[in-house]
Length: 163
Image (cartoon, rainbow, N blue to C red; front, top):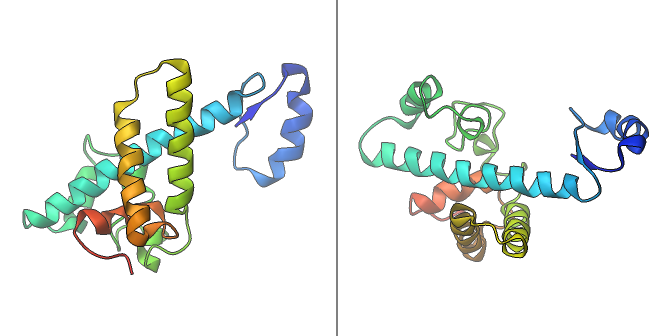
C-alpha cells in the first residue's frame, strides 16, 4: 500500500514489487499509511468476531472444526476464518497450529489499532468497533499475549492463559 505522486508510482512499484504479493497505489503521500491502518483495523475486528464465535461454538457443544467448515461455506466466511483460522487444525498454515508463534504479533496489531484510533480522532471519524478492538488487544497484551500472533486472542476469550 503506497502513497506517492502518480508520476512516481511506476518506479516505486518496480522497487517494492519483488518484496510484495501485490502493490497498490492508495493515493498521494500518506494514503498508503491510511490504507494500512484501515485494513488492519478491519482485520483486528474480524479476528475478534471469529474468535468470539469459535469460543461460543465450543461452549455450546459444537465442534469448532465443524463450525469452521459450516461458517466457511456460509455468511460468516471471511479471511480471518478461512485463511488464518485461530482454531488449531482447519488451516494447517495458520499460527494457531504453532502455538500462535510467528505470524503478526499482537503488539503490532495493537500499534496499528492505536494509529487507527489516533487518525480517527483527528479526522472526527466514529470507529466504535475499532476502539473496542484496541481495548481488547491492549488487555490481551497486558495479559502476556503481546508476542503471540494476534489470533491467539482466542485463548483469552476462552478464559485460557497464553503461556
